[in-house]
Length: 592
Image (cartoon, rainbow, N blue to C red; front, side, top):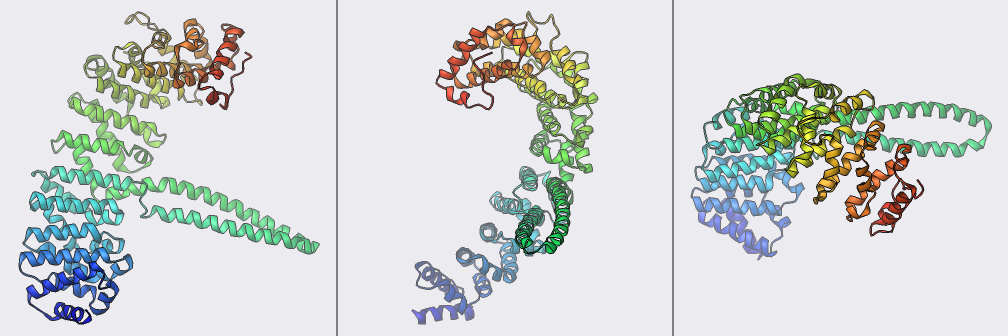
């Protein structure tokens, strides 16, 4: 066996006969798989660089392919520390494989890279090599569909592995732009757009540990140092009893330590803020440095003429509204401005409107300076027009409008403008409580409830302003007071509608004015106090939350008898879900 092994190694090192080399590699692979040869013994006899080079030392297609497959097998047996040995010969190996005219060889090399070479130190080496990264990209545009797919899969792996991989893919920000421009005239534009989306996802992914981990580690280190100081302090306290003089000195030291601890606490708070804000700012900077921003803006403006690309980019950006809402970058202002122009324009395709509305509704959800970028005066007239002219036929668009209005109402300025709109957007949405379409009914009740619940406590006039609008009578429907419609919905056979109605009542009850208004609808009390109307746990939980509010209100006592109250509370507690209520943080008393 030893003789055969030595002969195999000699053949690999010295022979120029392709057939002999191929047989030697095949034999070596068989022996390694069976365990007759140990990998550690192999690399003592022949270095990994030598194995790499002899594996590609073929001119014919089949032996060359077999050589690459052997290397793939070789890689699978290497541990991480051994892979460092690959860094120097890797370039020549990969360039030979990717430059080969045989498509199968190119594809095998791409797959090999995807499977085994995506490692930090290898990515770093590849990213510093323009020739290599160009060869990785080439098949995406010039190759067959099969080869293009292999290139795409490798790029996706590089992008999603870590930020070093992503920066390798985009280089200094020019490579992607060049590829994208070329791809606009080809069927591969879909692939390129997908790469942009994946890149954005990779950049915004909080799991990334590129630089963010450095700040986290700093915080951990501070905690370790703090604990060690605390231990030292304990030891010092033990020595305090030795003599009074030392005690006085220790007290002085303690005061100094306390001052230091206070300073450290302040520094920790600043670090925490830095960690919170750093991620978003870094993401935006990387978007700009990699050239992705140019493509996002290009597609957002619709310059490519492809509405599907616009929709795709908008959907991706919507997922990362939180990060965008914190950034001060000009890029974010540009995106918000383009989206505003598209939404306010009557020429924008109807199918794009829903995506624009969802983008704004998410963007406005997060409190921050970027809310000021949104020009409500520009958006509201368009929303009014859409509600009146088109919404009855397009249910998805109508739901998107309702959600967007909720986002606008989350700001003081937005709520004020909504309450002043001539055609009253809020009244229109409120009247949808009576819609025959359950999804629209649910959407409108939930979102108006959300607006009521999230009224800014620093602006007490906001609820009064909203209340005046919501409670106005309208000739459009028979019973236009929202509570009149809610009373009907409380009897709905659909649990979702009943739950939404309970949530609306709960939101209203949290404000004294809303609770006073509720008194005028005794039927609402009858339904809430009637256990028979809801036998399911979710319904009873909602009722119980409302009862908790009732139990703290003097107004309600005038309209609900002590006997009815006690009976309901006892029935709920004795029911199948009683234990979950009796352990609530706020227990409803049987005495009213």
